[in-house]
Length: 190
Image (cartoon, rainbow, N blue to C red; front, side):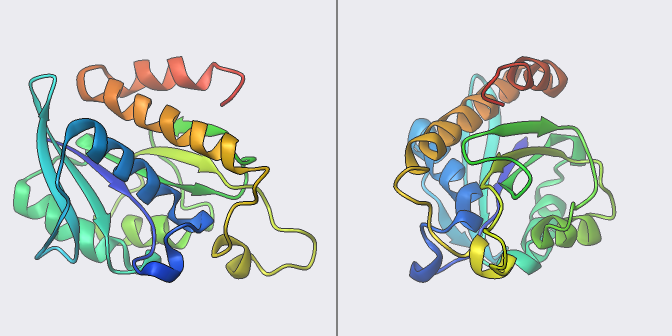
């Protein structure tokens, strides 16, 4: 089983914020694959489907960003999902809005949701799809920025990035992630 985890924060006040772009991708995949995301005992919204003959799972942790690992670890343990079959989708301050970047592993880069995953999974060796949200204006606190909404000018690029990230996830169901990574990272929009 492949597990796609989108990071974000639960609740109406966070729905359209920059920090929730991982949730946007999971919602897009749920729509494409006709997956009903239901609250599960794993402290998240969770659903499964069969895609291209492969079993896949979608997850949106409801633990708030900083505790994402508290949802994902029990889910992985319960279903016996191998770490190499986990793909995490999240926002990245170091990429401009609309850019995506796929990686096989890495540090948290200061992202508290990824930091929680690394802590609870005991490894940095999980696949990632990072989606750019840009940097805050000089003097704006990062916490305020990531919890802000995209500007009207940014929305088209962000919507396109969500679709490309979902496309990458779809390809990663059947193809090796390195192949998907090489294909998606070579485009100028990445």
